[in-house]
Length: 618
Image (cartoon, rainbow, N blue to C red; front, top):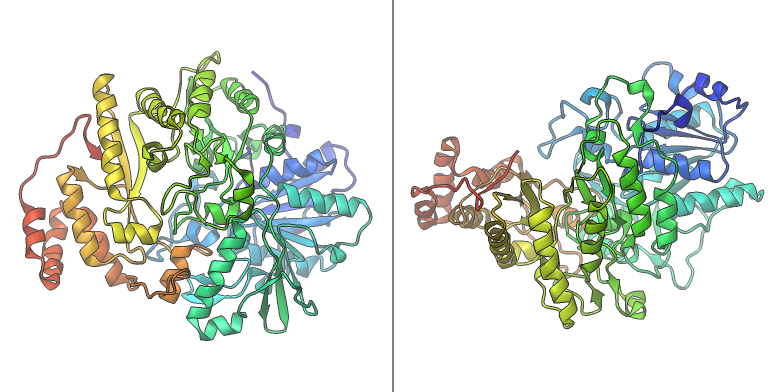
């Protein structure tokens, strides 16, 4: 087993820099998360990418932004630029619940300690750096900045905010997965180009007061127009989402006062060679030694997992994955994945069980269009909603082969699938019978050999009208998958559970829809606990519906539960079986004129505890 030295991590202090014999640093990264040198943590990915370009890179995790700013001064100024990221999550989701209550812990901080980053670190860190080092360029990245690159609704302030660069004095913003743009930026700087003249790198955002729109540019309604007219904000979103998910996108311009936010089109999806190169960088896969004796929950969760691809073509209305990673799948080679699995087997506390061999969705590995020319012209936000695209080659045989190869590695007892399964991909009837056979074989392989007692799936709701707003398939497909799950369990003598995820208060969902959900899930012998209240996050279709009241594609009005009372009225239906909710639910159903549903809900019922049980864990 490899023994690591502190020098195997990127330096975090002046002493660590001196130990390397460096008399300068090229790039200093400031990050809202603890420093975990692992490919699931953006700070490590960008740091290792820059290092592979021959640069001297240091990282300052979770700097203290209060007091004398010593964490921002301790390494001095870099030769090229500062990099700033809020971390792996939007800071406001990290800090607050759906009810806007302050969370008491932080999974990306040692021992869950709260209060280790400010609200909006992308803005706070950058302002401090610009005050201290006004002449040093700052590059902004990470999911918080990426999804706030244009006018967006901020749920926590309940207002429309301008693109984040209006509030953050950063010189350049990189959106999405940042390896390709950061490498191009470094290449241009090495060639002697001035930072302030670099304006045409794909997947970057900058501000300009004098730019003129060109023929193919998409000019959005200005920030000020959106403040006055919610319908214009809804219309803007359709352009933003479509351009985020096209292979050949157009440049986007949006005025904010006298300034223009310029969003360059994204890079094409990473090739297998490119994504392998990122995952094959010399990560220690461990937290920095400075955290010795402390637990970082976000790391513990993925410690023995392997990410096999990026991107998701599900296009769920409430999800930010396609907005950040895109809908086109970039898959790692089998060799790269097996190499990482082998490195996990050498970890001192590994017991032989991989917690996940997946990605944004578990079963999209190597899936792409049969005819790339069709994909090149496509601007659908989802390849599987409202129906599975005829051009999609949804071949599950690659995954079956990968699972079997991983199982042959010495030291691997079992690989579990912890990522969510898209059962609509498994149940779709394809024109090619080979795809149908592969889907059936995959379902059996998955259920029989890769479930650690519980399998996560996300029906999200039971009512078709709500599911339509969510861009999710009919609940009938969940029932069909449950039947397959139960059948395979019986055939193999297994006692496993499905863990279904559900959302309340999603745009388009009413109290009546939630009452129907309660009745249907009762009939299926659920006692739901794995549930959440819809939280509007920047740059999702659902958030735009929530804020504007319109569907950005149809421009039809959409009802949404907005007040705390309305949200709680919907959420209570998840827990109809708890005595403390019974009276209030009865009153709600009486108001709806649906005493029949009350009769169905509160008749006695027994709940299975065996293989057909569907009880989640909160």
